[in-house]
Image (cartoon, rainbow over all chains, first blue to last red):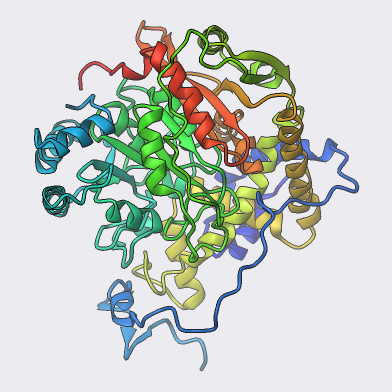
Length: 104
Length: 493
């Protein structure tokens, strides 16, 4: 599997990580090396083998439908990041988190 | 004092020969002296630590002490501890003050143990040398130019340099056992699901497991007694009956205390890729086990080599999902300049994550992306089953598996940073254990000489069947009664 610099940029966008052209170019060889190592898997015949997603055979536990969490909104909001773009205020208001406007 | 076992310290505390405040102050003094160079701790808070020690002394005076009450422990910076900065080795969480306690931290608090500080680690536990930490590399106390291993590198250096009585670590692909081997102490990764992952910052959730890092198997048993147990807040925590992990630790009463024990040696663990000097130390340790009465049998784990490619599909896939929570909205790093919401996400993550974490997120995103899922993720899950079945077959022929924990002794800092695949091969003997969910540990087995004549520790890996930790610890304990490798300490600390 050979990757191109454009592939790196596409995947980085899916992962929501900004990469410059130079960074994409620089990381390309390393990612290709890792994917080359991963290619070893393709030589194995796995027909009929049930995928193993987990180390233990677990079933989803159920619990009573009752409140287990207490409201800690103030505590959790006290560690919110700063707004940015020149504002050094915490990115919270009236118990909500502030993000850039997404609906006009 | 610094070489005392946890049991000896508990006895001294009970007899009022020493107080927790005194023990804790001694360790804080040693940390103040050595941490500026070794860099084992990211965050210290002597005031909080000493308050815990004073509370422990009160508890001891009231006669309510438990085995670890008043014992100062170092906590890996992957565990959220309320009011403590918890960074996970990342710029992303540089200013994150945990608003709650991890299950592991709660249990140590309830036991009256003292939190000495948060130890350095590879960023988000991704690394085998502690060189991916945003907070700088950690020195191996045996040779300061070398790495301590990773990802629990700070904990490893702290235990080896006696900057704590014992420590916690986490192991996703070898992050307790490989540093235990490289720094010369005992480290155990329990059966998946035995120790709560609640509040333990997630890397690859189907593989992550916390465990003890300590000076002996006896100390690890006492630590595991506190750490293990069901936690309803962790959806993969196992409802396993409470065990006393010290119950099988016996004084060697005869020449052959391990008579009847079958030890399997996987031929793949002694094949090409294993350093000759490491092989010699491991073989000598196995000879010692023969002398202790164990029967040695040859076994095969034929899919061992595939564990690395499988791991580097599954772990990054899980990581890319787990780390999507760092978006700059509710906590963690937010870029100071951005245009819109998308730009805020992309810049916050680009600035907050280091190079290795980004690589793994990209690999994970790639293998999960449309058109590649079957060829990579599904294929890896199928081979994961083959790897787990190798162990099921092997345990029909033996009770315990032994081999090296790492293919080499500690390497020089900088030696592998530009070659991720070579770094990944550090975990060739440890990763399969995580994929299968089995317990594994590394105990000191001797030393190999570096080129310039410095002694570098070598670990013996002991792998057990599911929930067989008590037997593994007893097997290690029998060896630690007839050898003194685990009591050796590096010079200059």
